[in-house]
Image (cartoon, rainbow, N blue to C red; front, side, top):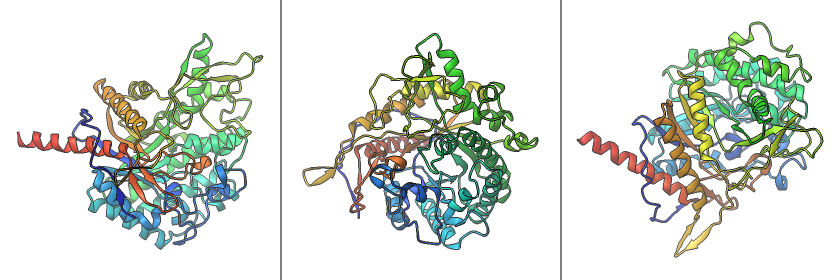
Length: 485
């Protein structure tokens, strides 16, 4: 199906970014590809999880999703029409190694090779994420991320993938949001594989960190075009309203943020994190050589940001508030954090129930710059779900998502302010290009700037997509004027 849109647009955003600042959009393999039984792809933990009754909204699965596996070329045309400078996609591990081991699957390589070539032909930089949560089911059956061997298998997968595709990718990202993989997958049970063990969650934290560290030199060795190497973390931005909030903020920061930034960027696990979790695990899974392996130089740190949390220490008597923005399904994504209370926040909110706080993005970027002044950053995900409606205006189908336009405008402005404060910010990738399978929420939440009719697979540019297209057009015009003057 083609694109339906209106020629009208929301004015000129009036923003300026450095000439080399990259603006694009992003997706993830299981959320958009479909074709789960085609092209030699094996089952992933998300196939198993979504097909388990009660795990996802309405029993939705990613079996078809956006059918991007078959519609990739027209989807690339949409990106080109918008003028995107970059597209961040993820490679489905079980599409390249059906069991997570052994030689790569030629059919899977062909799909991603065509995708990358198609991006380059349209002047769009490919940003490839090696792991966006679709662990091959056979590796989960062997223990999953809580066991060391999964990190070794990931390093092998990274090497073999980059050997096949490593001459054309602009940025290789090892992991997307290991916080979610570890804490939601093995702690709370809200994400695949659905386990509810704090000890498993913390073991998964370490082996995800180790997987990243082992993969970085493999990528650098196998790539032939000197790409940037990255990891993407979803940062929690905790705030306080109580005299016990500083301690709660420290604990949240340790579990959610420094459990990853300290080993990856400093080569250590912080003592307070180990002390906070001593009742959950003794961290005996950390071997002597691991931290040196994890602590590899990276070219850019991916930053995913959506909202803030407001915290204080629980008094142990009153009903404990748990407004952390994540689905409650029985387990906890905060091992060792039972004394933390997540308070309800003021709106406005997105359709996910997440508060809209652009200043949180600015604060986060400035904080990361102050903590790691020599580390370039990139916003690899930012966006919002709203209950979009497809309407007919005149003879055209439209999605008037003014709330998302406002959301993006305010968050782009926050990024601009961060740059003015000295942050080395290299780009901004809007989540998500397409409405898609939103994990445990199935198809009930729409994050896309392009509307997808899941019955017909027709794509319709939302007003937010036209806003982004105008922003990019303004940048091109300004660049041309500068070149001519």
